[in-house]
Image 1 (cartoon, rainbow, N blue to C red):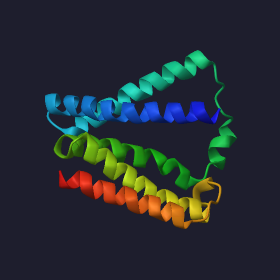
Image 2: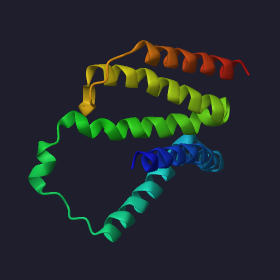
Image 3: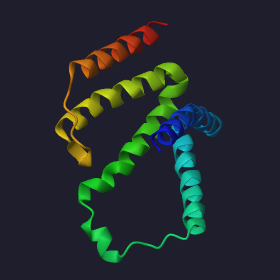
Image 4: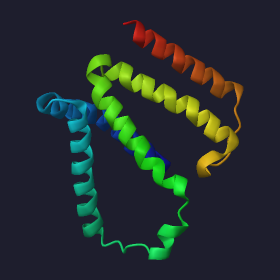
Length: 147
């Protein structure tokens, strides 16, 4: 099952590059990155609604919504910020540097989240091996940025 998860994650990574290009094309044609970002979420929401209806999931009980911590609803803001910045910055930076910087930010945040077991993630202490891996990744980002 881990192999399937890894494959799907890899394919979604491939899709992110395509997504950035498509959103940027919409933004270019309509006059700004905001339009590409809006299109991303409108089309994505429509696809999720179709998937939801076809999968015949039941809506959660009304009380369940009240039990979700207020801060947890902010996840959508990070998604919107990522798509908006990627749509704006992607054509300027290029796909490789944009995604390298994105992964670099994710790696730095992830080592902190894992070390302390934040946000519901299982705790995984920082190790020298992980720090070396992050350092190499950051070196790789620098090399990519040098063009």
